Length: 193
Image (cartoon, rainbow, N blue to C red; front, top):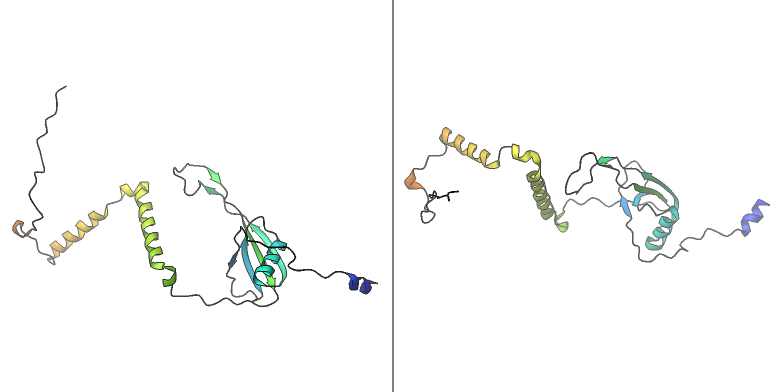
């Protein structure tokens, strides 16, 4: 009886849900080397379910999916929100959770080799911007004013070179003339009260 009922059952229909231009981001993450080649892991929005991901992969990439496993990873509780103008002490919050899905596919998928030449992505400019951002953050750090300035290190290096004899002391006549002389100190008369 079970064989005759299975003959009349409708087969599983894939790709019946229409997919239009999606307003979400699905991120394919690199698997550890020990996982099978038929498995792929994704970071998806919290409102995406297993059937949505399966239909998305079939309609957009023509990838047949055998199974989907999903889990939600909670983030650690943190103190103060990042990017806040004024850091408020003891304001605790939990960042948004991350939903991850592992997909088992019919065909194996192999990652391409990682590129070592990052010139196409303008890595030099990115690193320079990161350095500038880090320098700005150091300037705004409250402990920065307590540390010795960079000019102090430069003066110490110059003094060490003078003491070693690698640099010679320039007399007043050898100094470069940078323009007309200006009076630095002026007599200031304060009004009486």
